[in-house]
Length: 99
Image (cartoon, rainbow, N blue to C red; front, top):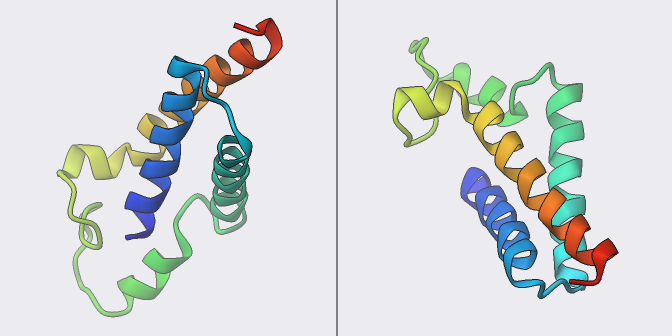
């Protein structure tokens, strides 16, 4: 559920960047994604919930705690960080250019 929440936030950033409909909610979404990034950095690049879930599983697979294909789970942070940064670039361009 946490993953889906943050994917929805990234989706909102993309929506705002594409449509130009930038609101307070857009800036809140960007702030929350940055906060998530800070939490991930502080926990060594792994979701703190993963540490907790590892205690209850013997699996060493990347997708043991999330219902995603192995490839997406393995490169989750790379994929969604790239998507977020591109979406944020669109938002900032629209915001500064007044487009």
